[in-house]
Length: 575
Image 1 (cartoon, helix red, strand yellow):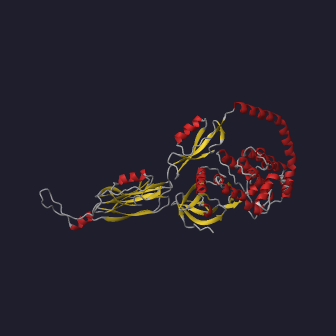
Image 2 (image 1 turned 90 degrees about the vertical axis):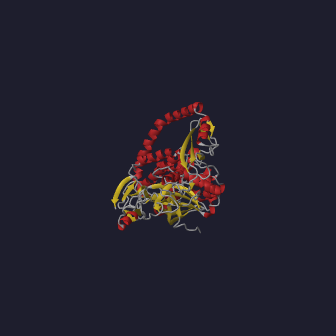
C-alpha cells in the first residue's frame, strides 16, 4: 500500500490535502497551490516505478514539454518534478465523473450527447496532434465530464514516457487493450490514426454500453482487434442512424491508412451527421438520476430524417466524386514530382540553441523553441528534448520543436554578512533568489547599514525564487554622553527626560489590515525616517486580502513611518 502524502508540501508551494484516486501508475492527490492560490491535482508516481531512473526522467521531461499547451478540452499541466524521491506532475483539478463511470451509470447515452462528445474529443486530438503530441492511451477512463458538463481529456503527456521503456509499454498496453489499435498491440508506435481508433471504440461504448472487442485475457482482446470483423453498432442499438455507424466503422478500420486521415477529418464527418440530423443544439448532459429516452424513441425521430439524409448525401457524392478523385490524383502527381525532399531529423539534444540552428539550417528544416524550463541535467541554453525525435524523416521546410534548458532550478545562497543593504539586495537577485524580510537590529560588532545576519545561511542550496531574509545593523545602541566644544568647555545640557526621549529607541506597531486587490504578488515595504536618517526596515511579498503587521523602532522626537505597496505610498504616520 502506498504511503499517504497528505500534509506534505512539495516545492514549498503545493500542500497536499487529500487522496482522490489510485491508478496503475499514479496516486492522485488534491492539493493547494499556495503561490497561485488555486486547487490542483497532483499525480504522484507509484513507488514501484520510482526506482526506474530512466523512466522517471522521461516522465518529468514529457510532462514539462506539455506545460503551456492550453485547450478548453484538455486537462492542463502546470508543473512537474522530483523531490525527496517523489516524482510528481501537477495538473488542472477536474471535478466530475470519468466517461467510463458515466457510461456505466447511463448507457446508452443520448445520440446528441455522443455526437458532441466525439466532436469535442476530435478537436482536442487535432490540437495536440498538430503540436506533435499523440495521446497513445485514449480510453474512457481518461476522459472526464465536469459537474458543469465540460469535457476534458487527460494524460496526453504519459505516452512519450511509457513508450521509452518496453516493460512500461507492455504494461500500459495490457491495461488499455480494449481501446488499443491493432498496430500498437503489435508493437508499433502510436500515431494520430491510433488515437482515432481509440475514439471510435469510445463512441461505440457510449452508444451501446459495451465494448466492441472483449475477452478473458488481454491477448484474446488484442487478437480480436486484429482479426475479427467490426461489430455493428446498430445491431446493439437500433436507434443509431446509419451515418453515425459509418463514421465509427471507418474509425475502427484495421489498417491505419483506411481510417480518417486526421482527427479534423473525423470531426467534419461528425459535424455533417449532427447537421443532417438537426442536432445542432448545444450539449447538455442530463443528471445521472434523470430518466433517459430509449433507443426506440430516438429511432422514431431519426428514421424519418434518415431517408432525406441518404438521398441528399448520394446526390452530393455523385456530383463531386469524379472531380475530387481527379484533383487528388493530380495533386499527388504534382507533389511527388515537385514536392520537397525528405531529410533525416538530426540529433539536437545536448546542443546549444545556436548550434542547433546551424545544423537545421544546413538540412533545410526549421527550428521552433517550444519552451524554456529548468533542467538538472543540461546547462542553460542547451536543448534537452525534441519532437520529432532524431532519426525520423520529415519534409524539408518542416519544423522540429525543441525544449531548451534554463539550467538548474536550484541556487546556492550567497554570503551577505557585512555587505551594505543595497549590495545584499543585488547579490540575492543576481543569484536567482528574491529578497525576503529585511529587518534591523543593534550590533556592537557590525557597522550600521551592513548586514549582520541572514536566513538561510550562506551556501545553502535552495530552489530559485526562494526568499532570503536578512538583518541590517543599526550600529551600537546609543548611549547618553556629554558633548564638548572644541575648547573642551561643557555646553548646557538638556533636561534628562528630554535627552532620553530623543536618544532612546521607541517601538511602533505598523499594521496593513488588508492588501488591496491587484497583482497576485505585491511588495509591501515599511520605511522609517528619524534622527538616524531614512531607511527601509521591512519588506514582504503579500497577496490581495493579506494582513501585514510589523514592529519598527525609531530614534528621536519625531519618527515618520511610511508604508509602500509596489512602490506606491499608501500610508504615512508621524509619531
